[in-house]
Image 1 (tube, rainbow, N blue to C red):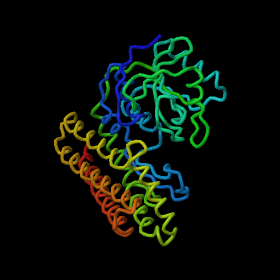
Image 2 (cartoon, rainbow, N blue to C red; image 1 turned 135 degrees about the horizontal axis):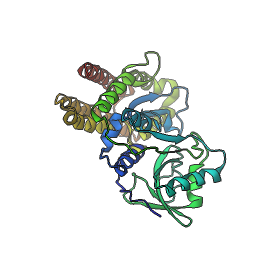
Image 3 (cartoon, rainbow, N blue to C red; image 1 turned 180 degrees about the horizontal axis):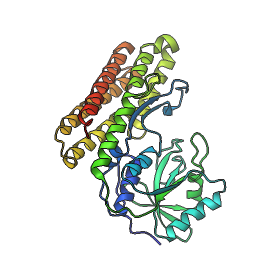
Image 4 (cartoon, rainbow, N blue to C red; image 1 turned 90 degrees about the vertical axis):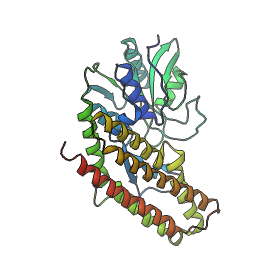
Length: 333
């Protein structure tokens, strides 16, 4: 039994799954719209986490699962989420029961043991959607790959109960009731307001635009504090988070820019197109910053840590000005 589920590739796993789920229920919302409505754009810097071999020290989006919850809340869609199972067999039966009812099931899994991906990263917050089962084999829609994939019962169970940091413990989610009309315009505004609040808030924590400024200060002191070798390891870890893991610093900015372009048409606010252009420019700055970090790591750049820090501080100031202006622009809605 396989559901009539259209598989569409996406830039990011969670936003892709949510977009495809909505499409299954008859609502064509693009990945950028899901990302913006779900207030996915963010910045987190965790100074208490070691930078050695841990790219999850930095995050350019909200916690995994938050885009799904926020988007569905803003769209007023009733959903169900089972956060953890203590019995693996019960977790598998729960997926089977939903499939028998014709319901596609979002799953949070470990990336490392997925047999169809060449990525060997211990990341336990990857999203895919289970859309069918025949015998001992499941059909899954993973938007980070171009086609539907097959997983055996043991494969799926293993990735659903992958061990390590953020272990999923069988976490799954699904749409509880088929949504009728969606309050798209209101959801877009709520998503933008939430993003502005998060990016501008947290005055005492290294989050949002403040977190970017704090990271700039860290980079300025890298070589003095850690020495040459560990300073380069810090840059490599940051570079992985920006360019190799998920859609990173620049990628999420480009995704948000695409959201603003669509939102400009949908809520009849052409001014948002100017904001989209500015966010694209900010994304370009993140990409140039990542490029210089890579050159520094490979000893192909004469740019100092102070100059790298200046680049990042400039990004922080531009994002602060951007979100203040966006907050003001949508304040009367």
